[in-house]
Amino acid sequence: AQSVTQLDSHVSVSEGTPVLLRCNYSSSYSPSLFWYVQHPNKGLQLLLKYTSAATLVKGINGFEAEFKKSETSFHLTKPSAHMSDAAEYFCVVSEDYGQNFVFGPGTRLSVLP
Amino acid sequence: NAGVTQTPKFQVLKTGQSMTLQCAQDMNHEYMSWYRQDPGMGLRLIHYSVGAGITDQGEVPNGYNVSRSTTEDFPLRLLSAAPSQTSVYFCASCSGGGYNEQFFGPGTRLTVL
Image (cartoon, rainbow over all chains, first blue to last red):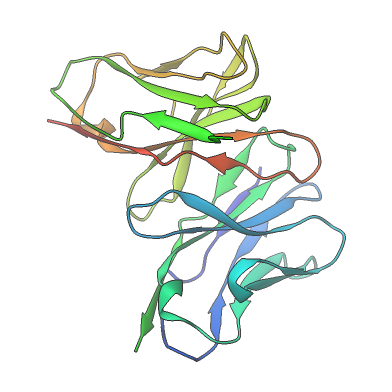
């Protein structure tokens, strides 16, 4: 069975400093991996997805994630945080090609001025 | 394209009442899902459908019913509302296959008194 662990429930950074949100997954097969962002009282927006074409994935708003099979990790990074990045971030794994997406518990990112 | 739409946006029910949350998508996606979001728990799958006439249970199906008579619509029925069903509900759709992501509706905030 697939599962997702997000190691930090809350991360706080200063504006202009790097962001690291950690995600580890468990999957029996080659998984699809995604990061979604949810701003307060909003729906979920796709940040990026791992498609097996490249291990380093670039997404919207300057975010990147690196797929490391040996570490079963898919950590999300951004070189410089912006106030507008403050939101909840969810790591998601799927191994059934659309039938079964499993969400991590989420990491709340706070950005301090 | 409107994408995934959900109605209503907000709903207050009394214990024991029934209601239907509506979800529609105009992207001709085969896969549709219902999730509930509770603080600290990410999104949990309630029911999903891989095509018209086909539905299956997710992680937390008790107290909910679904049907899929058309590709576009996937309503979620609460049979007899309980306070434990107070949550935010999200509908999602996906074209399936490969590494395709889910598209989410804006959510329905449900309170059961």
